[in-house]
Image (cartoon, rainbow, N blue to C red; front, side):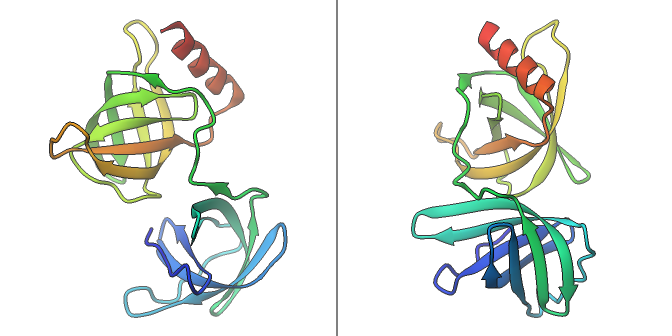
Length: 194
């Protein structure tokens, strides 16, 4: 997802089909009306009602993220039902634990190998040989300790930076998506015990 202009009040929206900038025309606590900004590289999409999109706004305090569902589209105008809370900079909500285990990241039709640097019940930081854009969706597969079952979770990239060890790798911050309460509790308990 690319960042749109903060000065003009634009937000970025992304679906599995691409990313677009949009100007906010109206907003209530649950809905946004946007005018999509199109160009040669980003032609007008046709987004069906019910499709989920990721939204990102940038202001002087940083990035804000929200999940939304398309209500209706009429040409360049699109109405979205947004999640009730925009999260600022995806701040960590659970304690982080230092880690050192292999992680397999499935991105589209590619499999990337990485090494976990730290993990929490909400996500993980992974060393990868490749920098992945913010909002990239993937499936992560890992095993924290021998004898424990392999874990597989959907995840999304929330930040990235060059590795601090001076190598040509990248530290990629991942947020787990759609964990059930039992999965979250199991992961928290496993991290507490390790």
